[in-house]
Image (cartoon, rainbow over all chains, first blue to last red; front, side, top):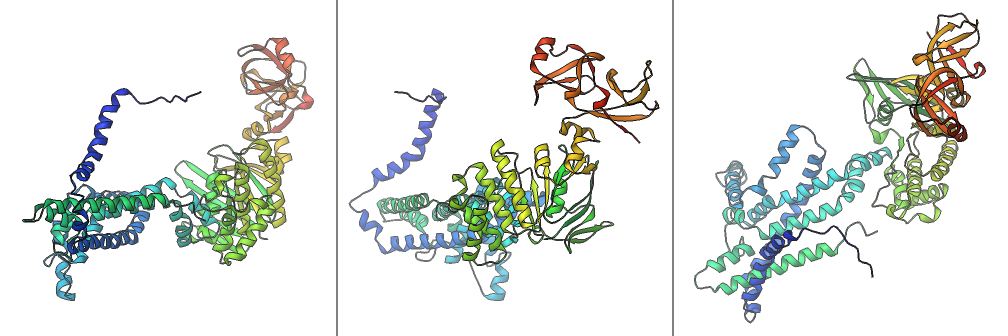
Length: 268
Length: 350
């Protein structure tokens, strides 16, 4: 019997690697152990739990859609643009990644709140008020999630380069045709993984939503907010929070598995 | 069935490209030159990726680029130029089958999907890939991918085809097959073609005419046979495997005439008045070892007919391996070289 021997990893890496894996996996295990499996079905089927789950999923889908419609063009522009304005914009786009989401929520309030930079005009001219509505939830989610999509797609576009685009143009394809038939299909793996990350981030969004959209059941109370309320709520058992958390974990895992099962580029 | 006419000047810092090039329908014009000669810049201008400092690119009656006195009068975008590209790397779209790759051009021109697929199948058959229309690029060999790329370029029915070292990445045999295919298809479709290469084999097998570029200037042009048998420029001489020595005509003590080159090279030639600067060319096979000017062996490498010596004065000598062994030649060895006058071509220099 022959065995291939690769260079292998230095022995001392195993301990930190195991600790890292433990840090990532054990909390979820604790959640599973701690769960009261008897009352779980009842906990996750209460109307408020169902409302929160539905609100979370629907707002995350809408936010991801908005990120796709707006973020992919931004990624294309960033990937192709040169010069310092593009570099600056590239840096600014990543800002929501490093900003604490609560800061993002406050910033959104100052932009779109009733006395905000843009919000005031919206209120006086159109009578539109965004904060503490479901729209605010979507905006908060898009704000924190869009960088994941933009960075992922932009990176893929840069890696793919423009050589295929040049060939397509030489064959008579206009810029829109090149984008639609060559550029975007070539970055499909990056687009899919970016979309998944974006959706997952939107689903887990808490801080910006709490400050900008509030915590009103059925309107702005998404799963993370419902879990937080249940965990801190007077008179409510923490078991509900655990049950809701598990529901969110399962929803997230289901999304990841679905994205993994769908391999782009293989279909005819 | 249109011809290409281009006068191109590109000035960028110290680099200056000044080329006039023309190709008739079905004609392949080879552009030869070392790296940095301006070949890629020329192609970029023809393809529309670069607006020249001055010049005009005309295809048939259409003006694709026109820049005069720093004013851009026209600069047709690449997708509207009808200038096809085939480079070193086939760049077959990896997410599309062979058929969809070839159908891409017709589709972009507005042909219905079904019809463009039929056209693609015809082209795939024409390049010998009839049964592989459904294959994805990753299931094709390098040569097959380059065939797909050729079919794809021609299916778009370009007025001009630009070939940029299209055989450089192929093995010898595949390259030979593809050269044949390119020649056949260019003739059949009567496409004006510009072939950029630094492979002399491409030039002699494909080009009807060659233009030799050096430092952005055309240093010689003509039929490949003429240019390669009687090169004027050192680059062309090296490409053709011919020795080229620049020297002064001198009268030898015995009354005969010779050319005195650098490093003590003395090459006999037909009698003429001394003093003038000339350029002489002679094949490496004509050089004999034994008597003549003193030289030192700089390099030994396998040649086409045995062993090729590079000697001082930049003179190449081709010898049979047995003679190399007999003379005990090695790097640094001192030899005496001569070349019979009848193998020497002399060209006066301005």
